[in-house]
Length: 416
Image 1 (cartoon, rainbow, N blue to C red):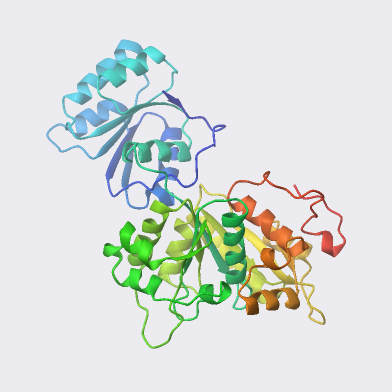
Image 2: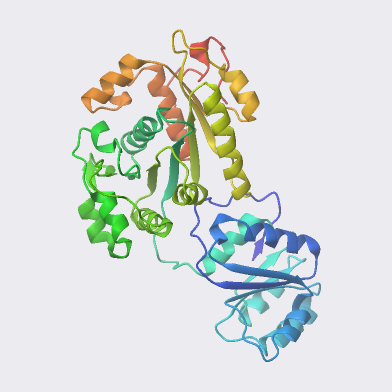
């Protein structure tokens, strides 16, 4: 039995998205209807069609007399014990055998739960409901219990061109793979100008472009052939970085490629180009984590604020995107101080990376990562903290005496 109150917010943010099904709900109380409406707006229910109305089980029985029931029916009851079971028996008379039923009640009653399960109900939830837990329950009804968990998708995007989003995404991916020992794949979606191959001193390939041109063919065998292996735990899905062809894949193709990769890899890093198009917007909204990389200037401030607001509005049940300030303290350049940038954004930066052209330039020219070149540098430690944070491993492997992201500015502030 599931008792989903507002305090229980431990749902994994990368549960499997709910497939394209019809869901009808009949509620007795307005708060249940409101929770269902919030769930309907969630990215993980974007393919499902959810209808919510008041009336409870009796309204459902009346509505479906002589009509086909949906894939999933959610009904709420005010009753308990035998009276509640009697309502469910009435519903069973008009409910198609293939329809799954979730019953919502107000009493944590183990006996009622067992009887509901014996009568064929899929789940019994105790109100008040939280949208994320409701989504997790629905997802579980349509997922193969024996299938492997899907990977976590982390999207990196720049607030402006040249902000360094690609470089940071590649370094974070390397850290996750090599230091946290998590199988990780970088997907370079900057098809014309991608730098994933260059940054790892590997040949660029048609990998991502080939996959996008025929995503229906992307099975495990083809995916393994298209990926470039970089060490024991890191794979590269590189872009062609060529201008001889047009790249006009539909948004659904990008979605299919991401789904295929996350089926076989625990951590998927999306390196998104700076720009705005339907497929980029869809990739951001569907990601489990979003990292927005900005430089401390007015253009980045405006663009990052607009980008984060759009994404937050489209993801009401997800945490805010993470903000990374890059290239800070560049000599002779007027800058917005990180503190003022954060106050305007209403969002504390997850990392503040100082301007260091020597370190970044040498790493880029050598085809190395920052942590390979200078593993003990303050910048490398910032990348480590960001990597642990986005993978949910914040407390693991913290270097002794690790400095704050603000320490190079002389703030002396302890990181949370």
